[in-house]
Length: 355
Ligand code: MRU
Image: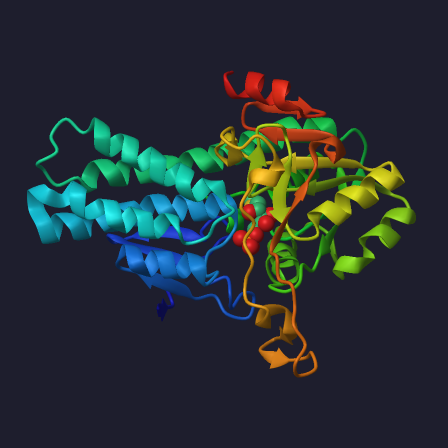
C-alpha cells in the first residue's frame, strides 16, 4: 500500500477523500503520531486497506466501499469495455469479503449495484454515474450523523459526563461521527462536561483516535483502561454511555466493538442509560437477532503484543473476537437519522425502518 502525505488540510472530517480521480484513506494505523494517507488506485487496494484497518468504523467502511466500486468499474471498463458488468461481479464479491461484521460494507455495495442495474445505457463508461452516487452516499452519511446529533442531544437532560467506547467519530464515518457526533452536538449545547473514552484494546481506537478527535475539538476527555469503566460509573456524574454500532439486528440487538456488552451490563447495574447512535444503513433487518450477526475474529497476535512488541509469554494463546453483541434489553435508545427508538424491540424497529 502506498502511503502519501496528501497536500490538503486535514480536518477530522476527512478520513475518506476522493481527490483527483483516486481514493485516499487517512491511515488510522499511524494516528495520532503521523497524518498520512494511503492511496488506492484499484479496488484491491481499497479491499486491502479495509482489511488492514487503514480505514475502520462501519460507516467509513461503507463510504470507502462506495468509492471502491467506482475504482472497480473503472478497471472493468478499461479491461472489458462493453463486458464491464460481468468483470465487475467478482471484484465486488472480493470487496464484500473485506470484513464480516460491519453491514455498511455490503449495504454500500448494494446501493452501487442498484445504480448499475438502473443504468439506461450500460454500454457507456459507468464511472460518472457511479462516482456521483458514491459522493452522495458520503454526503448523506455526514447529514445522517448531524441529524442523529440533533435528536440525541435532546435526550441528554442535564450537563453530564459520558462514557464512550472504541471510535465512533468522524474517522469512523463519512464525517462528524455517530456517537461522537452526538457528543459534539450535545457539547455545543453545554450538556457534556467530560468524555471518558475507553482505550479499546488491542487497536486502541479510543486512545489513538477518539481522544485525538475530542482534543482537537476542545471537548474535555479522559482515557480509561477498558476495565476501569464500572469503577468510574460507581463514582457518579455519568448519565449516559454513548456508542456506535457495526450492525443492529431486527430485534434491536447491537453488535459493536468488543467490550461494549460489558459496558452495557455495568451501566444497567449503576442505573446509567445506554445509547446507540447509528444510521439506518447499520440496521440489518435480514438478521432476526444478534445471534445471527457474523462476528469477526482477528489474529491472536494483536492481543499477545502491544505496540508491535510481544508482551505475553511464549506459547500463550488469545481469543481475539473483535466485536460483541449487546442484547436489546440493555439498550435505552437507538438513535438514527430518522429519530429515536426508545427501549428497542422487533416491532419498533420494523416501524422505524418504514418511516
Ligand atoms: O474494528 P473497528 O475499529 O472497525 O470497530 C469500529 C467500531 O466498533 C465502531 O464503534 C463502530 O463501527 C461504529 S463507528 C461509527
